[in-house]
Length: 197
Image (cartoon, rainbow, N blue to C red; front, side):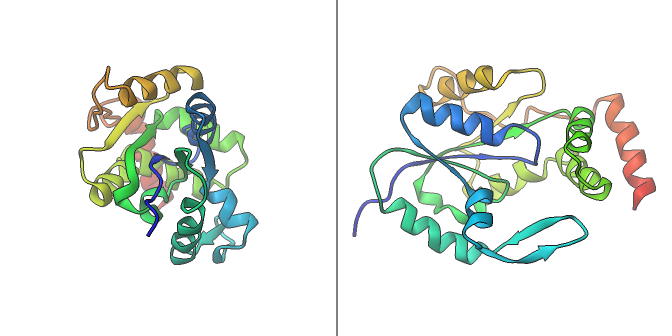
């Protein structure tokens, strides 16, 4: 059996910069960027459509099978991005999983500007507030390889530099240091989410 390729994951809610940062890192390390949501959409690896949220439902089993095929070809490092990345990539292949974070009050504006339905905006804002992507990634991969980066006031290039520092071991891989709930803006968002439910 052929040895599986090494993988770096980028995950987080929509609007935190996963795809942009993953592409830049792939260029930087001569790796191959794989947009998991894009593959699911283009190749029809879905189980249907959530019309209310205006989004496709990814077939996780189908995506796992497709990734096995992708990982068999070539030798370059693979850079995967997608909010469900930790659920479909073989855990033993993951070098690092970077959970990108963004201040929920700024995320709300970003997603609204992208034309997301308000229900989907608030659902993702709530997930960011409550560390959902971080918790799920740590649960799936364990804490050692999960690194959290706040992208709020950073350019994508600055985020890539931070990622490179972790990969090159000049900076530790840390998580649990981003806490939005202590901010006054978060209290207002939680009240708004409470009114929407």
